[in-house]
Length: 83
Image 1 (cartoon, rainbow, N blue to C red):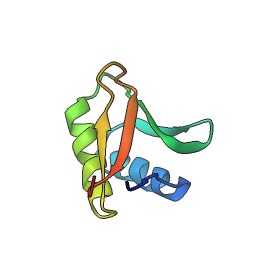
Image 2 (cartoon, helix red, strand yellow):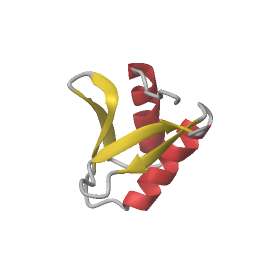
Image 3 (tube, helix red, strand yellow):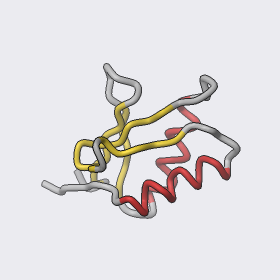
Image 4 (spheres, rainbow, N blue to C red):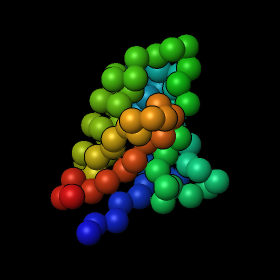
């Protein structure tokens, strides 16, 4: 099993990438730790698929992928692409 988590620098880079695409939504860690995943804060009802595509593009360079929790649209799981 592969363990994948983002660090604070990666969170900043993801948010920077979202802003570069003129989006106001952002990701945060839960209580300062990304082990549980990331919390997506959507602003202005921005398209979740576009947001996920941008995050996915960034994580693709780190051999990771993101999936949305089926019951909570704020919860993102970060997994290894090898799982």
